[in-house]
Image 1 (cartoon, one colour):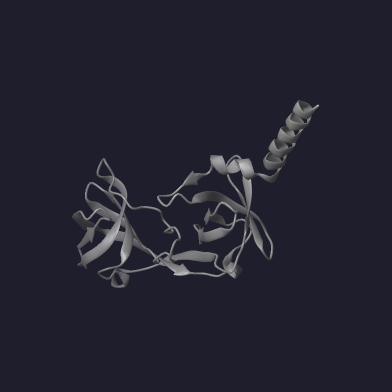
Image 2: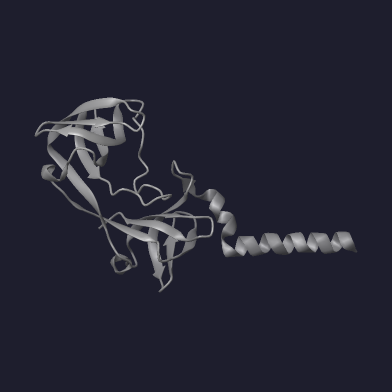
Length: 192
């Protein structure tokens, strides 16, 4: 009888976690801070929650007072200043897009998660601006490696700004970092 009760209890616990979506945490990817992240479309909004539909699953995240909403807006070369952290997209040393990042709150993930130099010389990399001219940008990677790149004539500059919960809407594509209690830490609106 005790074995039967133990098995029944195990089935109950497994079924409970499956139905609550708790087991789906294993399917989400993590950034360099090991925070879980959900990427997808907002399918439901409440006063204290957001539901994000990913490719194969959905997740319901709690909105708390410390949840930060980040929006992306167009920027210009004049917005780039030494010391700012940027996410740079380049191909063969030519920069075609730059995102100016907001500093993350303490113990929270950055909103882009990019902090490395690409292995093949193409793609996104991140770092702090050392200097900027009309044609070049010099950055220092988080590993301390200096890098000077040419700016494309039509380089696209985007900057992150703080948003609010009111900026979120059903149908928006978002990236939401959350903790293991399913509390949203940072929600970035990606198609704004």
